[in-house]
Image (tube, rainbow, N blue to C red):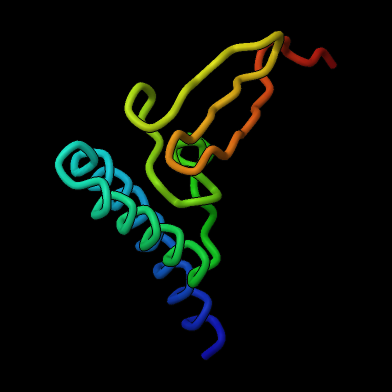
Length: 108
């Protein structure tokens, strides 16, 4: 009984991961036509991730604003700047700023 329950959770998480990626693809394709629908797709993807305890992949995590939830498209609703060894992404919808390190690799 416990074994099948674990298997079902693993299958549900796998399906949730696929849906999150699909919703981000939909959000990207819909952004120029209808930004509100795009924002809704991102919200649904985040909700699915929280419900099934699935993390959003790091390459997708940087593509939406953590404050207002809109998909970030450089040149349309976000500004990307490089300063020293930091990537600064500014959401032009809400003004939120995210900073990510880049550059030098750590040596062991």
